[in-house]
Length: 251
Image (cartoon, rainbow, N blue to C red; front, top):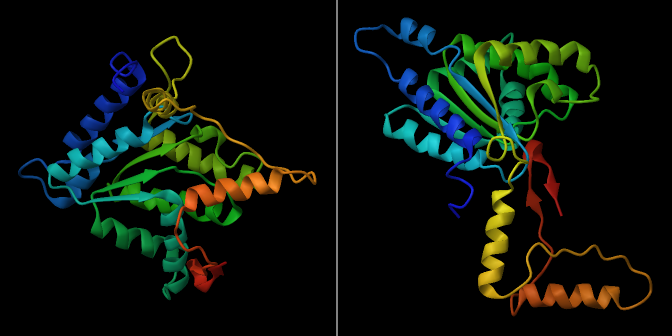
């Protein structure tokens, strides 16, 4: 709904910053590619905030605008992207495979958009600083969303003191860091929850009602099976094996 969004100063500020990124990413006439890439540095954006504050909405609006400006844009969920990144690095036979893959990607895109950026393990923490450094040096504009401020990424992770300080410094040097919340001076607004509650009121049902079922030897399992049957309806349900990265499968 539009309620609460019109005066959400953090969203308006982020939208303005993203619009400026598109304008600075467009190639001015008369400049060679090297100069264009140089001017695109320090124009990236890192948006962080709690769930439902509009990060993904703003990212999608930015992607639409960037594509309308004829920029080469790749928009990815970061978890999926980093899985493919590991595959590409593993398949690279040259020396310094992280730099090779980063330079190949920089040849293909002008703008990278990452939704749900996060660092969760030591492998990512080790390769991402150099990977992003090459992209920034090549002038690729990166706009990303995260639930976590840069300085809190990979909190408590193995060897965090080795890998994260360079990455946090890299973000500070090359990105405008924007924290999204509610209207200025208020608590963060969860717009998704607000929309769900509005829709539920219109439909006359409860919103945000969840249950965690524990089998205590009573009717809990029967209630769970009844809920499952209600959701499935007449559909046929059977186990499936899903292919995941690195040749693995999930049943």
